Length: 418
Image (cartoon, rainbow, N blue to C red; front, side):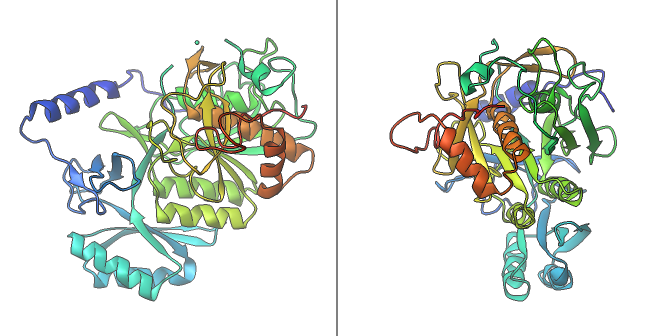
């Protein structure tokens, strides 16, 4: 697995960018979202910041991938029968098709393009709506890890497990995971059944702390229990979709869709998505196609401290998860919203890192606990997302006002045995 010897420091880049904005230094600019200006500047292949200044329900800033020359990329996801019409619409509007890809298991096609102006993008979107209405055009948003910053082994007891690492699946279930790099040689994963691949070419590979932590929370093997997964005995198929550009980690819509397609092609019915970003119609198309093929998807609500659940968790086909601490208090950075369904331990969680272990916080680390409980349900024969939602809801401990609320959803997930 590729590794970088020198860790980059994204906090430094953010600090410098913040000073530029605060001090009003030359060269500072924000692209207003409407969507982001397709002419956006920046280095070839870099990510861009697109600010939402219209009071909408979107995050305050999102990143969009750029192509060579600095133009923003846009992606269409739609059925294979629409691909020719999509290309014609893009070209008729003055856009340039950069590449296409086939999501064979989903029966969909991705088309990535750039546009010379806002008017060109708007024209293409209108033409696609008319000529290929089953296809969706959207910015090539870059999703980020749904992790916060981050100390005890309270999580098993909080959800009702008898002891850390005590529960093992009654029969094998395969869990899919779309995340960043994983270190399968970590002591917590060496004895686990892990298949790992990356969709990221070249050397722009971020560190493996996040992906290794999520993988171990799912299937980690540790006789002492500290790094044991909540679905011990499950098989894990982990797909890395994150790359690192300009000291920032991101996963494009295109790669997330490819990851979903890869897992569905292998017949995997349970997928963990510990990543978060803005609403995206093209990604929504891929999610809908996966759900139609029986995939159960569970995702982190995000850590922007906003009253809107991030995507893909907010998609109706996805189970959205927030994080709580040992006192059942919501993680202070967690997003809230009507789409939230469940809460799980995610604050000061002791988890594996690329090397060693440490305490981590974020909705990223709550989502795999819910995914693990869903895997236990699947091991007992529960398969559909509706049945899994009902099983999790029956066992949930209500937190906050009413049966369901925007801070905790139906409440804290509780294990109904191993």
